[in-house]
Image (cartoon, rainbow, N blue to C red; front, side):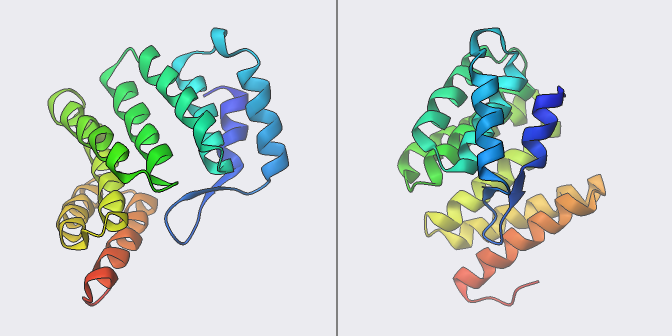
Length: 178
């Protein structure tokens, strides 16, 4: 991860609603603009991270453009899955759920076939999408599966993130939360 990518990542937090937010919007905006000034020369991960920064800033149209370019530059299944998920989020956050769903589904298909280590990531975001799409029963089913996967990975932050998403899905269907 480049220094700029690391700085961008450090200026993004996950809110109580499971979405990305800028902790220092002005600083993040400057970093993202700096990166995008040399967009043609950016490696795919750097371009994707700039797109994620735009997503956290709420600049959805520009995020979609940058993340589409990152998807086009993806050379590995892992890069394709990550770009598709982030592009799905760039559609989901402003409420474009019909456009977001096929992107998550494509990410899941690629993860299942070519990049199993990214499957939990793709399914987690799809589960969040299902909550927004008012299909919480399916979200509970998928996020329960993700929780099992992430427990096997043993990463406490990933487990906590999925528990929060699963609680939101269960609350949406009136079940006991965890």
